[in-house]
Length: 293
Image (tube, rainbow, N blue to C red; front, side):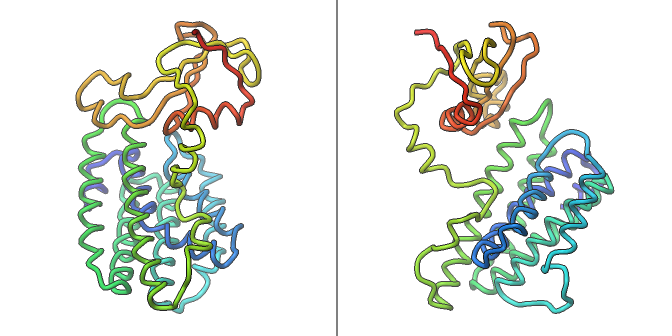
């Protein structure tokens, strides 16, 4: 895994660090939700989202965010908690180490989020009587192979990496909650449902738009709301892929808006996970579209 620090580009190392933080942050988010620390939770979520971003780093913003993290209780005491609290602290440190990497702008900074994610898995495994460190090492090795294989433009491959990282984070969280219930008699999921990952379970959202007509691959006209008068097209990324490798990595949907029906003039894009995400985007922007019949 240390090869990521010496052979990867900064963008590859940043994505790897983000995946490590995603693995380790679910229990942190859960404990913050349970204790009502919503403002602190938003700071940690902001850190995770910042890690997953692409493009130039805003050093001022990253420095300010890192300072806010350092002021949170997870970094105040020299006392090391045990069990799930230690796992949560390791998740916090993985996030902070990732933000520190952005400030240094060095791929070597990815080593620290990796180490904290491994410590997280080790402590959680001890608490739950499971060899989660081996699973974390396997996941990190796979993530390294994934980012080294990247070529071309993001966000397609980056989205695939994040979805896989979030899924492993949910596995860790479910394992922890099961042990928590058994050890402390917790009944029901309760506050765990609030915010356990920055990539939420979308089953309810998908069900809400199950009957919506899907207009993939056709050009519509925005008649009201944001971008009124402009043209819009929604494509599955897999349909835009040109090679077998790109098709394997393609995840999600791209919404494109432009001044012309060929989607070439002043074209902007927004990635979402599925058609339910398209409908959410339209509601957010109060956008109404006239689709061809």
